[in-house]
Length: 313
Image (cartoon, rainbow, N blue to C red):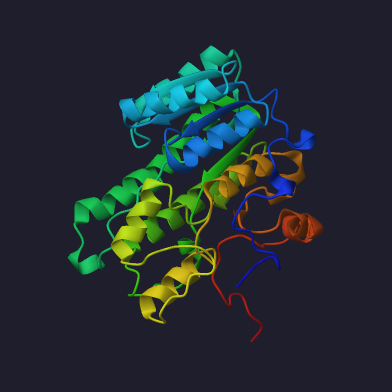
């Protein structure tokens, strides 16, 4: 079920933000959900790659402020803007986008949608429907609002990176009741695919960053799945729940947060231009991807479709 022979669970040399050819020195970066977890790690990775203009959004002012303080301590020369905004609130998001563009003095170069919501892992029939629907408000409506903001306030050739999940790719399994999350994230990926097709000057890529247990969503999944996620050498009893978890994370049982963060820096580089409008996993080896870049770019590979269709009959 792997796309590349080599599967990574931690950062590696080819995606290091310190590499000169991955430099984002002249690029401004806008990140939703940038106050914690994978979003904050992504912010730090792009600053390590040379960006000096950063804007992050988040719902909680205290968490956002603490993240900004940490980031500025590490990168004191960077311009770091914070905007309290729920991604499902178009008015607040427009203020964030417009404020960033005005402060930077130019359209945004790299826009990253790291905001997401994981509804409680309960069967659909017994879920709190309001909590279940919040997944759609955040992961679908939020993706649309993010895309509309990019269209208004980002450069015409901006790179747009959307955080997805491996769960959108696999059959439903009652052992891991995540219908609110998987279906809303699936719709979000399709929203971004359409956005990329409608705006061919942009480079839109959806990325599964891995199962990041440092994030709130990752911690929630661990807690509600009743599974202790450790390292790659962990031994699990064979059960439906465990099998489902293994499938969803594609054997990356514990993904370090910086794997996804560093992969996103690479995905924003010219090396990754062939991934335009595709869905990719941070665990995949970039050297193997580059070796197949023409095949990937010129085919329907890495697009969500109907398995087995079309077929010759």
